[in-house]
Structure formats: C-alpha cells, structure tokens
Image 1 (spheres, helix red, strand yellow):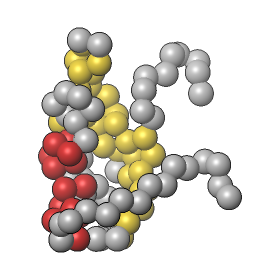
Image 2 (cartoon, rainbow, N blue to C red):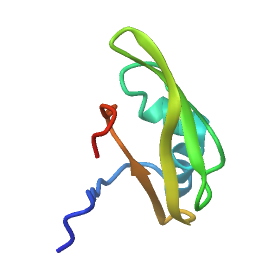
Image 3 (cartoon, one colour):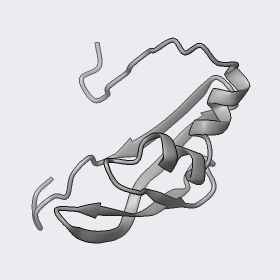
Image 4 (spheres, rainbow, N blue to C red):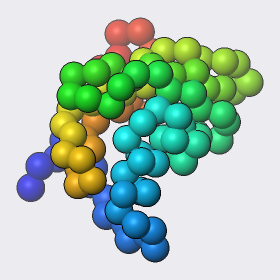
Length: 92
C-alpha cells in the first residue's frame, strides 16, 4: 500500500459528463471546492499544468499556485498534487 496519496471514491446522482465538467476546469472546480470562500482557479487542467488561484485565508487574500495536474483521463481520472495549507519557509 502506498503512503504518499489520498484516494477517495464517492457516488453522485449525476451524469458522469456533468461531474467531469465540474472537476476538470478551474471555474467549476472552484465553485465545487471553494475552501469556504470564493475560489478562482486559472489554468488548463492538462498534465504538467500549474493551476494558480485566489482565495481567502484568515481574512487575507491569497494568490498562489494551488495544484499541479499530474494525470488526466477524461471522465475517468483527474490526479493532481495539492498542498492543503501554507507551509512555513523551510518546511517540507
């Protein structure tokens, strides 16, 4: 078992094509996963792309890279690397 990933499966009562549209572009992804504030992501969801975004953390606006797209298999798989919180300088 790999210890370097989190995988989650959920079943939605929606057509696969609609769910794919919601998670495979920055505008809709940001609406679905708004981190508690408006999340605006910029960039094409293609392998190797660095997706940047703007959101609010502790009352201040943050504009920085959000994730890096690793793998895309339309309507089947979207894999990305994401750091879910800010790291202090020097932390890994």
